[in-house]
Image (tube, rainbow, N blue to C red; front, side, top):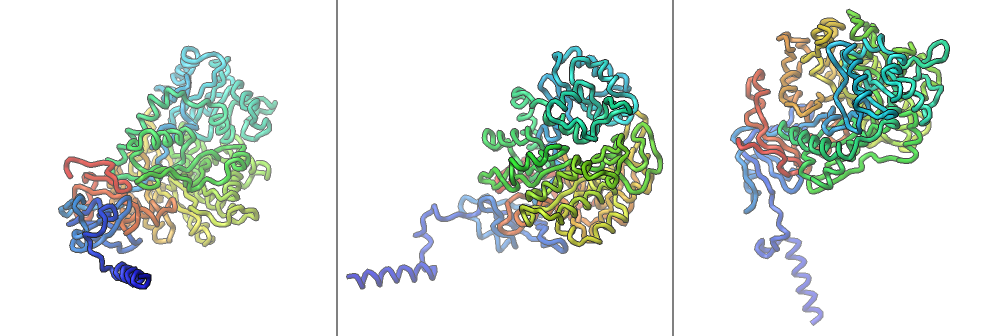
Amino acid sequence: MIIKHMVCMFAVVILLNTGAVYSQSVPQELVHYPEYVFYNGQVLTADADQDFTVAQAVAVRGNRIFKVGSDAEIRHLAGPDTRVIDLQGRSMTPGFIYNDGDNAVPAGDLLKESQWQDMIQPKLGGQTIDQALVTLAYIVENQTNPGDPVFFNLQDQWAAIAMRSWGVDTLDEVAPENPVAIYLDSSYGIMNTAMIDLAIESGFPADHFHIDRDADGDYTGVAGAQLVGFVGREIRPWPSPKWFDEVAIPDAIASLANYTRNGITLATGHMSAPTMTVLNRLFHENPEGLAIRVYPGLDFLRQNPNGEMYLKRMGNLVDFSLSDGRGEMVTIVGASVGPHSGSEDAAASLLSITPKTNVIEDISPNANGYNRWTSEWFTGLSQGDLTGNQQLQTDYYNVILARQHGWNITGIHNRGSEGIRLAMQNVYEAENQDKLYVKKLWRPQGFDHNVDWEPEVYEYYEARPQLKELIRFGVSIETFIEQRDAEPLGIKNVLEAQYGIEGLERSAPLKSILNKGIKFHIEGSGPSNPLRKMQMAIMRVDDDGRVIAPQEALTREEALLALTRWGARFIGSENVMGSIVADNMADLVVFDGNIMDVPIENIHELKPVLTLVGGKVAFESPDL
């Protein structure tokens, strides 16, 4: 009997190993057919940096892409409950990835927001700078309690004028009983005596060089990056629970839903602690409200004079995630620090190597822009001028500390050419320091808004081959296509007004960047149409109908890659998303037409009709 039993068992093993088991004998619970089969389409896989595959059909099983191929290869995989969709020749792409998604969720850029009555409030503005001051005085007198700290984000066009017009005496007069901070941007501010004293009482070093003083040692009211950051984080109270319940959560749900309608499946960027609370609440309380993946670069180091203290308490949290059936929905992809360079309409301006063609005092009075890290506006110091102790009082040191602990830096805005070069220099020095607790980073260093590319930037990069694997760049195409205006100042196209046509022509030189082997992608911010960004990169026609530097145009294929595959590369996720290949996350978009065949001037008119995030429908149009 024992021998007979062994023979039977051996026969069963042979049958199993040879596949000689009838399909009807397999329990239905063990059979997992694809949930979706798409066929008869133009599947733009983005599976290579050049000459990517264009397939006909895709099968999706669970939260992954199961198989990509021809109609004949894919259609027979459908089971009895598979949803089979005829694409009718329409395009399917990977989900689009936006790296400037700081405000994908409210409070993403909380550092510089207006706030009183425990609520986030609008920017401070008016038709004149005097009106802005009157508004400020009214709010302090009528909408705050004596002693409450008050925070104002001044409209961009008034920042440079406020630099010249306001000081500690101005604010002490209009707010004698309230600590007041006015943000000219995220790195420069004006504060009254009460706010500066409160910061020092709360632990900000009284001898820090970001507190400006006159010849007698008295405050001028001017505040540099680290003081602005300390006040914005340590002094600013968290918004009220009412704000979270009635404003932040509903706004986040609406914002993320709008991303899906545009075919965007992941937003990354620098994000604040309140943003993380919003994301956590959505994940646990309303998973459908967390409609896309949000991958924050935590800004706990941004303009933080106590960076070492934070890191010693936190350790390394890179890659910590919140996951559900769709995969990793919230993942920490790095830390953020402050930018060297401002925007073209900010008082700090672009930190550029070549001086402006035209210095407009009311926008920014400096020919090359101001270095935000060094508070050059009032210190007069460039990066190379800092003493060793002063360097330790800037975000230069936070990058060094972050690299020691294995944090990569991401979500940092550096628009000007000297800002880009300094960012590379900082990364290079951080990588080559003696003390590294984590020998190799898990994700790359990522820099956003890199607009102004000059020869010195390329030369610095090419002279240090190590940077090729360390850094990824996001490039803003809108900066010169849809130029900002300073309407109250009567100035149109502020980039061109200051930097001339030469400045426009060296903005976002995508083909040159690509040809030099520099890893970049076209960045996106709010829930906007990615095909419009493709159109900008291909046509380079600005709002005035001019073609700007046509030699820098990308092909359709390159532009698509720059918004999908290369966007995933920016955060080190190119092995799991950004292309349509087997085992990648099923983040997919179906459009209502053919992206590669429609006339380029009409490409932005195409609309998504289906967006999948992790194999689940995030948006579906009746037009599907």
